[in-house]
Image (cartoon, rainbow, N blue to C red; front, side, top):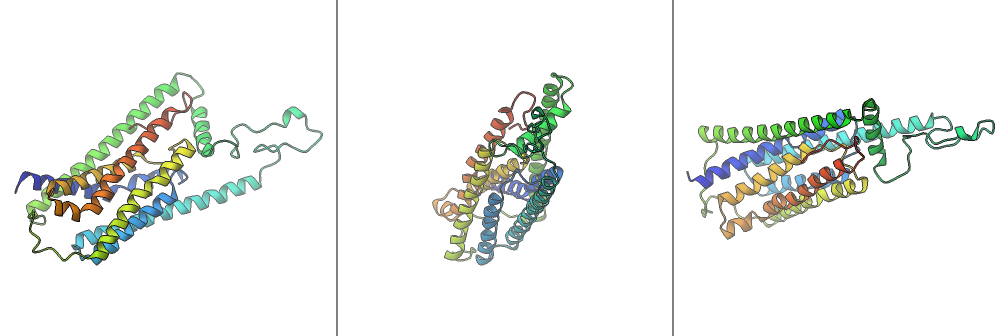
Length: 316
């Protein structure tokens, strides 16, 4: 076995491990916050379309059962995350509507009409949930209020606490990426030792199924969906000026999966015919890396753009 084949197998296995765990951090983040306000549903639905067309294309092209099983898993995981987001959005919308309907006058910026009340008391409640401002002000104001209430005792404590919290989050994310990569590498070693994985000879098309135009077309549709999925999320982050509610580890694992998947293809062979055949998957994997970098930049930008002592914990 040549070195490039071994590296192709290892990177492919790491990519597989990353995609198996990619949605878990966002599922946990939504559960922890009891909210899915930070993530764009359009992003998730377009991503689901990409996974769905990938599944149909895999079945149509009669790919190996492992690939088809993974495509089914991806669709199920997408459906779980979308269902969770829809549930939290519905529950929180009902809760907000109920709270607003029971609030007395003078709350949420509504001045009391009672003429006996002094004018100085007819003030807008500070930190109200119905604040008027830029898109995403609800998320930022609620988070800022929580941080102010927890760190009002000393002006020095917020900085120290935030630095320690940032370091902890960074170490946790790096450790998680390392563990996933290690699991992927060990999985390849196990598959190689047991004979489940064998190098694929380059330039040998005798055992390959005939090319199916419809399946290849679905592959390109899937790649376009993957490329376009992140655009609504990037735009939402930009309009909200916040990445609150998003899991940074979610996008780190996504980037790890895309990078190692593209590397596994190119490490296997760079022959023009092989690269052309793999072009849809290369576009879908390597192309989205630039969008992941844009989201990382937003995490960094919006975590430091708040006032001192009110910055989000996010480090790239």
